[in-house]
Image (cartoon, rainbow, N blue to C red; front, side, top):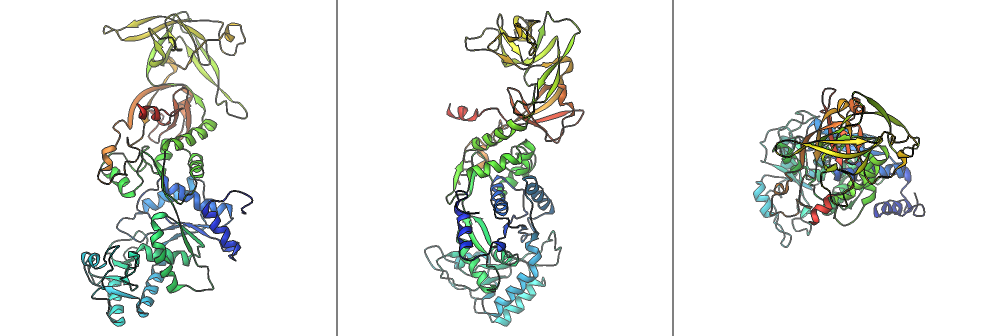
Length: 560
């Protein structure tokens, strides 16, 4: 890649500068380093697209490395879900790595730090350590255990490893400076005691490395050339480099940490802790609930991998954190589904329509196009009969002049079928309309070429033949939070902004071609929106999730 080929973002410019300064292109290697303590979310999707996209652009390998240094929160379920999400997004990793692959080497390096008097075992309580660490405006004070001898530190660290001490009794700290301006450099913890079963190493270890110790050293062991992190890791860069200085061999590639800003998405939260809270407190059904900002939730809702990649490319990479309106993601979703989703007919708020002059018992199979965006047009057959369902909103007994759907005395076209005219209604004792009676123009069949078929009417509505209709459960999803930044005010619990209308479950009727639809099949329900088949669907009971409407209606609602 060269600057002449495309406009470079600042991450690409860093790589280009390194290549110009002597880094060989065959030394480029990137990584995506998730912690397997939850499911990936839309923020991770951007990081995935960044790192794997760089791998594609520069023809460089990309590792998938799991930061599995905290066994109390990590599970194999999360490892499997992460791998599935990365693959589903369309990316392939070169090596599947784990921080736990390096536990022995990390331990050995920690022993070397002790031997060089650059690490010590601290036996203070966490509360005392926090006090003596000082504040951003005042220096810290040395631990009373900072002057332990090398021999004593080696003995204690070995016994920590062997499981002789309870959790919290000792930690291993780097000996840097308690007066450093960067508080992360004030003798950071390298190892803590944890008697917890690890999903890969079992009970082999009783001590586990801290992220800052494992991260850079793992990058070095894998010979990662560029370690891209989100902006909150900028203060950690100094420590990243200090740790590397202790073990770096000049004959090898030295990893470079650089930071980019999170691109937060409106009306969502992406904190794993808060997503877990939503699951555990049953505000949602699971990590893959279609209202969640997780990749698995978005996939289940019907959002495509292409739409997510396009969204990530559209928002790009920045140095400053900002809030991206979720309507941009919705736009990317519509843009992709418009190209690939077959058009079908479904009625979600049905009212019965009877064509009084249509022959009793007759049925026709009418030709309907599947998707006008297709390069080679395909068609399907849709059944038509005397009795139909139409949307209740598509009829008004007394309508204003700008209502161009069905009313008494006016004409509309039934999509792919005939022109009909409203004649009368049937009401129940409470005055609610239960049936609409109309007549049809027998010569107005769509595509027949007759003069009547070419007659222009102002409205076109969709329908489903009642004798052929397939009942379906339809889950109408909306944004999970009513506030654009539910996590923005730390004084207010983010759950206060949960949208009580984020899910409505209704019964609808779909055309029979959908009877054989499979999980995650996408459709445009004409005039209603984009929907996909949920995993709960079966031959006996179809279940559809609403992915997104045909246009953004939320902005209009928000302005009212």
